[in-house]
Amino acid sequence: MNERLLTQRESEADFVRKRFDLAVLLIIFLATVAAAWIHQQLFAGDWSFWIDLKDRMWWPVIVPIATICFPAAVQAALWTHWKFPAGATMVCFGLLLGQWLNRIINFWAWAKFPINLVFPETLLPQAIVLDGILMITNNFVVTALIGGELWGWLFYPSNWPMIAPYHVPVEYHGQLLSVADLIQYQYIRTSTPEYLRMVETGTMRSFAGGVLGVSAFFSGFISILMYFIWWYMGYFFAKPIYLKAKRI
Image 1 (cartoon, rainbow, N blue to C red):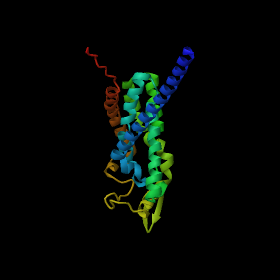
Image 2: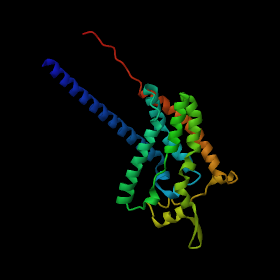
Image 3: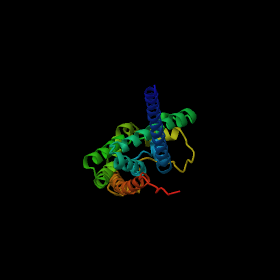
Image 4: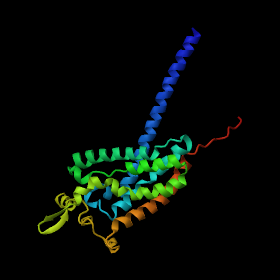
């Protein structure tokens, strides 16, 4: 009788322990996604919000630099302690899910902006490459040098199929615009005319018109530095600390 009772209690304890572990993992995942989403909103908000700001000059620079932080930190924590090879992909998937919920509930349902004006970019291809390099090399330095540069270089090509239709030129009241600019004029936002500008313009045109290559190279270079910084931050905060027991 005692053995049966002991077995039942062990089974119940194992059930509670597994459910508790799942609850803790879910809370950690949601907290990480929320922190990454807030970070992305603060540092790359407008370039991520509006289709007319998704140009070839600042969008490929601002967004990759601002979004590589949490993938690098989570990679450091998960790979160092558990050899889990999908930290960056997990963060970027959660970030994309949070962005879509925000755009649908806040921008579309509440503020009545059309979804083709405010849809978010994707970071999943770059995240998969970053995780793949870390898994193959098992070296965060190589991952930073190669993966960080590819993080900046692959951002624009991976999002090009979504934004290409909005870069088609159109004529509107005698002015040559892109479809993105036309949508911008039809749906006036707050802070206009501060943010009112034409896509595909800027001082970086002095590089013989090759603005995208310069933006991608600069973005990849800064992403390497950001990867190193946030890798060490993730490693430091995920490092277990043991307290020595004192005799009473």
